[in-house]
Amino acid sequence: MSEKLETQQQFSSPGRAEATRFIDTAVGILVGWRRCSTQTAFRELLAASERHRVPLFAMAGALVSLASEHADAPAVGAAAEESARREWAEELRSITDAEGQRIDREP
Image (cartoon, rainbow, N blue to C red):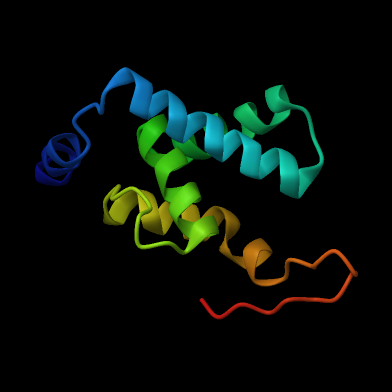
């Protein structure tokens, strides 16, 4: 119960524009990786959010953070970050570049 309260406090809703931007960016990342439609990517993001019981915008922000490895990435909290790692980190480690060379990334 206290974990749920802590999560709710950490993830009080961001502004609508910011939440939309996180979601749009995360969907774009999935479209690029999967070569799928935006609908399919959104469904994957939503399913991951529901599976890990993390708010959609937090899961989206965690995926953006995981994919970008930038200090400017959104702070989304430990639960969302761990959930994103479970969903997509393995795939991120084996991304290939434009020439088809494997790019190994450290976790």
